[in-house]
Image (cartoon, rainbow over the protein chains, first blue to last red):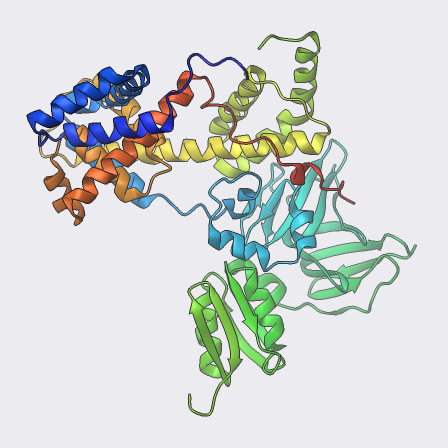
Length: 333
Length: 193
């Protein structure tokens, strides 16, 4: 875009015009002030031009000023501005170009491994810090996306295919006998056999947990595939399938905003909570191996931390609202 | 800006490759098929009026997603404003004397004002709207917001300046341009496995 209708008056001229407006509109201005304003206007074309913008802004209010329902309109405006939701979903999108990117969102980002963030970049559906959105796909399939996770959608006429790019999803497949449902991961393919299951991409490979129906797992490198039945889970990499284990209920509970711990090390619990806490969340190595039992709310990471502090010999140090460190409890506490 | 011969072909290509995908994405965001269809259509109309060239499909999708996301936020905001306006009208002791057309004009003006003031802190926006729309004095606004009247004058000047800058950008034909081109970071993401 190279054509500009008219050059914009300098910032200084615009600023002065706005200040004059704020003074003159109240009627408090003295005759001397008004005189000064006229001189200011006459002094420079840019001043007159800036003042025209003041008038233009004023005209936008004319329908409101003239309306018998002016007060209702202003009340509606106040309510909308006050109730504007925090744009949480945009914490992730924000980095793309400053859309509502808050300092808090940024600190949340910085806590997370860059590789995980970079891989989320191009994904069709993804969840930011503290989110577990639910996606309804056209075939009746529902996908829950865990915080800091994402997948791509590649449905065609012959198959329904998702690509897990990062993190964890929970899938409840819709019925479509003509198009098989598959999830591709970095380590291999899963084929759903009418089912509810979760797929999680971690450091130790892909973990599939099946809650209903069955899933066929085919590692990318090895020839052998295996069927995981209801209530079981399996971990695999491209070259190896590990033995079947009982399915961990925690892999399903995050959908309902709960973190289930059953002897889980505190460091792992904190790693999980980081997905839901916009800000720094550190844990001292001295307490990282403490075992945690119970269920904790994921949608309120601060409350979860307080609950942990009430049952473990730890103390929370909150230097700033978004900066929390977990340390051993002192004798004097 | 003149149309180049390759442009419409580019556009058809973009539309063919990404319209279904964008529709599905917007539908997910909005949860309403009719709104989603309108919005996806508008997004492509915007793209048509301000053509962009993309190096690869990922870049195109990142750009479309960002643009559509902004449009979704606008739509939600408009809807909540409309809802609040209808509720405020219903709560009035006397039924409104305004015609449907006058009411629509007020809502339109409210939407514009809201869009202009969105970047400002709520208190500044509140002060400005009370001062200008209701013609309240600095002291009256100050009492409502529980700040000093000197602060109110500062707020009014700040909000006015923000609106003037926006008017100037509108005049120059820049204001409805998509906010920022897709960042190089986004384009540099390697293709998914």
